Structures are given as structure tokens and as C-alpha cells.
Image (cartoon, rainbow, N blue to C red):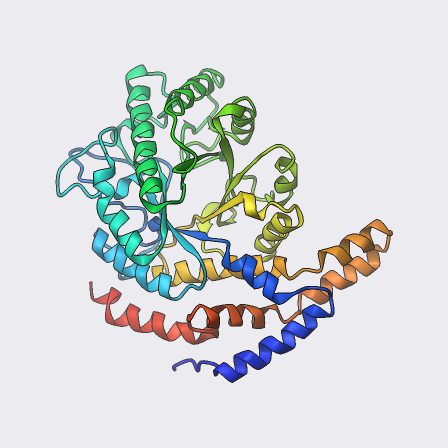
Length: 429
């Protein structure tokens, strides 16, 4: 049955009550809304087509440690369909958005163009589309799903020719990103992740890491203006086919970034890339004294790095609470990274992005000054009690007002739009 939309009067009434509630705690909801409006979230293209991409292949490829599962009908089969689906999602999400591309989403007019030969021209359609949509683009080299990734090693491969191929790909990817950044007038955020590693107990764990270090040094030797491009490097605990040994571990990238202070390379923290019982929110305060910037991949791991759709859970709230409490929000780039082919893919985009925005707003509305005073004075029961009360605070009424101001469907009524597109467009492909 159709979901009923709230009236403007209902939204206003709920917001005014919430505004008073938070004002009594010393929080100005208008300031929180301004901060939320100024924080972009980068939607990831690979949710829309199950990480297939649009490469034209002349040989077989493997998954290379990355996989979307599920067979929900309506998967985008080409770039035009993917852009059309993304447009629907963008209209259902309030606030400032970006769009994140992988290199395998190049459009080559049916020609085989290997990854070390891609150029900005192969992303011209994406740049035109992004300008029309009013969103900026981000970018990722694709170090998987390629014959030269089948061994499990790319930038850390012992074969120099293989390494050189992937180094060229990394350089071309940064050239593309710089062109995007120049065209859109805001830096293109580039994330570098490799699936390199071994399934079971390699003897030499050192040599691949030296190769990876040197490969990145070569990739980053090409200098671009920070007005056009920002680079991040992403660690992982393990992956499919690399369960025992991951070359690009957390310690590797922490050390790499710390020893390359003049290259302005930032760490990338992915919520699913650590031990299943490990969370990343405490890592924010650990790196904040040393890092100028940070890139986040917002995901949800279940049992392993399964990249489930983000929802409004404790992990997500704690992540954004730390960004706000550490005063690091303005120095952090936020991107989504999940891919679920078992549900409506547009719905996944919207649910995940709205959840991230809600978690951020929840953090912005926290009376941190009061909580810090309780903690300083040793009133920890008072602190705990207020934290519990805040879980039921009317923050959602503030988010509804955010949606209204951005002319986006408020509350659960957006499900009507999702249902219509799913049945009338996506399922008929």
C-alpha cells in the first residue's frame, strides 16, 4: 500500500518541538543543519551494477577478491542505465552528494582499451553527466578482475613487467582524476586499494611489501595540484583468496603514510576492513593528532568484509560521533562502499546514504560540552544516563526538516518512488 507523506505543517510542528528540546541542551539545530548541508557523501557507482563495470575484454578475467552476491532483477547493464538509476537515487537523497567511479567504468565505444591506456576521454560522458547533475566525481584505480591480477598480486608482484603494468594503470587513473578535479572545480578523491595477498602461509612476507612500497612511490612521483586531486591508501585485514596474508595491511599503510609526509597521502579507513570484532571509531582519535586529512569508506561487515548496506547502527553512530568530538569532520572525506545484489540496488544507495546522514546529524546534535564536563568532574553515571536519554531524542524530526528544505521526500513516503521505479523501469530490463 502507498506510504503517506507528512504535510509541511506536520514537519514544521515536529521540528519546532525538536528545536526546543535541543536548545535546552545548548544545541542549535540550525547550526547542525548547516554542518550537515556542508558535508558531502560520495555514492559509489559499483552498487548499481554489482561491480561488473563496462570494460570490453579480449580474455578471461577473475574476480580478484571482490564480489557482489545476489540476483535481484533490474541490474544496470550499461552506463546509460547506471546513470539513470543513479539519478533516481540522487533525487531521493537530500544534501550534498558526490559520485565515486572505478576505472572499469570507462566507456571505450566497444574497443578493447587496457587499463594502462585509459584516459580522461574515456570518462567524458561521466564528467558531462556529473556536471548536469550538480555532483562532483571521485575515482579509484581497479586492481582486480583482470588477467594480470589472477596470481593474486598486482603492484606487489614479483614479476617486474606485471608491476609496471599496474603502475602505469595507477598513473593513468590519477591523470583521469586530475582532469575530473580540474573540470569540476573541486578535488577528485582517489582511493588506492589492491587485493594482493596469499591464501595460505607465504614464506616471504617482506619482498611483496617492498615491491608495493616502491610501486606506490613511482605512482605518486607524478605531481598534481591539490586543487585537483587528493590520494588515499586503503588497508585490509584479509580478502577472498588472501585469507592468511594481505600485503597492504593496516600497519603497512600507516607506516607508508607516516614516512611520506611531503606527498600529502591520507589513510583510508574502511569499516569492514578490520577484524570482525574490531571497530574503527577509536582509530579516528588515534590518527587525528598526526593526519591532516582522512578518507572513510562507510560499509557494514557481517562476519567478514561482506560490504552490507549501511544502516543506522551503533558502529555508524560511534564513527560519526568521533569525527565530531575530535573536530575532524571538516578534514574527512566520506564515501560509501557496499554492494548488495540481493536487494533493489537503488534502494540500497538511498538507505545507506540516508543512514550515514542521520548518523552524522545524530552526532552534530550531541551536547558534547555537557558530556565532557560530566566526564571531567567524575560524574560518569550522569554521563551514562544522558547518553541513554539521547538515544530517544527527537533528532529524526530535524532530519525530516533537512529533507524538506532540500525538496526531497520526507519520511517513509520515498518508498513509493522506489517501488514505482523498480516495477516500471528496472524490472523490465
